[in-house]
Image 1: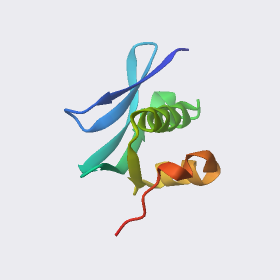
Image 2: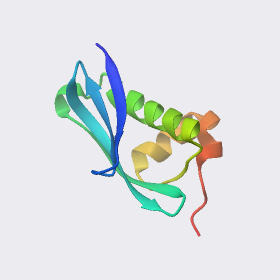
Image 3: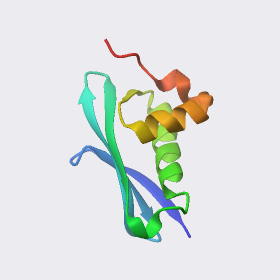
Image 4: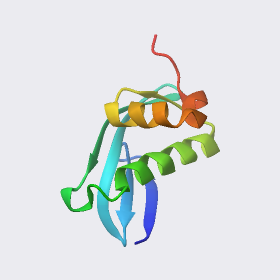
Length: 95
């Protein structure tokens, strides 16, 4: 199984493709220099296969590479960051 995580700015979401098929996404709203992540969804055919984790990890790695920061309002993204504190530096506290 091959994964590809891509940003789709027109749809305001990062998408994960599994063997070239859309398997899930994590949606965001831009707020100045920060992206507010609001919702993550994985197609039921891909649940329990680590696709959600791969999506969030790929998203956070791209944000780090671009120098972006985020607010994790999505419970799935927030839980991932709690389990992987190496990404905590990307989080901006809400004001």
